[in-house]
Length: 122
Length: 243
Image (cartoon, rainbow over all chains, first blue to last red; front, side):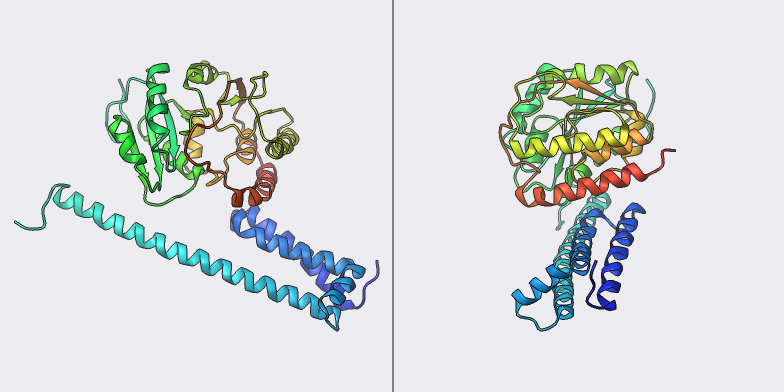
């Protein structure tokens, strides 16, 4: 296996270690399968590029980049942006659901306290 | 007659049919009537999983108990709510039945028989134990074969219909599942996890029908994530040590 630099080898090994760590988090139930999906996908991509120099060279040429390392960083950055956007969407939904739960709870508490048929005016 | 956790008298029937429903106002009346006709000894509970239509209203109009989620939580979470209800109300068997008309209530007795007899803890209504003439799309069939293989590797036994949503669970299983249940796709990983916990699984031949109305829980977007989730979750369930 040919590596262009020591950095490439370190990145490739780090990607494999990251994937194993992510899967271990899933195993220990500290990360759900849903959130692990993007992490596993990204680390597989980085690992494949790290271990396959011809593929890394090909993609670098196709993207018009000067250095192979830029390609790896660009992919890493793209993943970061996608992940942040995904988390923002998820957070928005959680906020919305949290509000719904609080509203639902307030209405139920009101029903418990004054009964379902209570009127607002005398 | 005994009493449940809240001191309420236990119902005469020991089996509860749990129907998770998402926007199923069209198909619900038919399936509720069918269960009443074909299996009058079973109690019914509809879990309205955040429907935007009149699902809960329709179910209540048929005199059925309804628990409504304030928003959509997923089919697994809906079943989990059903199991909590079943355990709290003293049921011995909980049956998972789809609202879309795929599952024929005439098979309820056959499905519950091995759980009642104590020969298994989970009975799976299977389309493929005997030829039932059920048509499955090729892509889905491929996935079923894959996960059937995964289950076979993990449990060292064959389960031909891992994706069947027509199942009967014994009380001990429901007591575990009310706390720990996959929120979506309760398929192969669930069977592996239950098998690893020492619960006995058994397939019961049933005939399934094409879905009659409503929208499936399995949308296109989810179908891309489904294989990944099921493979990883199956692996994790397999890695868990049996107690």
